Length: 102
Image (cartoon, rainbow, N blue to C red):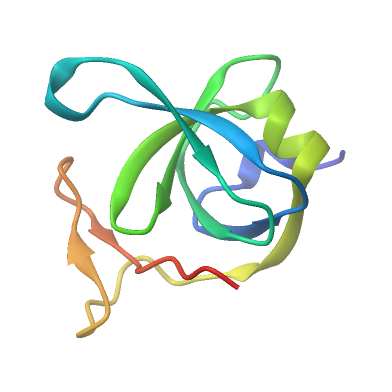
């Protein structure tokens, strides 16, 4: 996939139920995001089998890059810099869009 390293701020719809990692309260646990859910990519690295930071339903989570490549369909690029009523502040201090489930 050409240009895959430039995914920050893009929204993807998952084609299958996908396992991701939550570190809420400092304890890692597996969470399943249902198929047809929309996620926003927050941070990389976006190459290899590493983890990418995503935003889904008000939560910041980690997903394997390989799962994103295999099970994600590009929806659009969402501007991260503007703050709206629908956005909130992520734990790392950047504005995060509200991801929706379709």
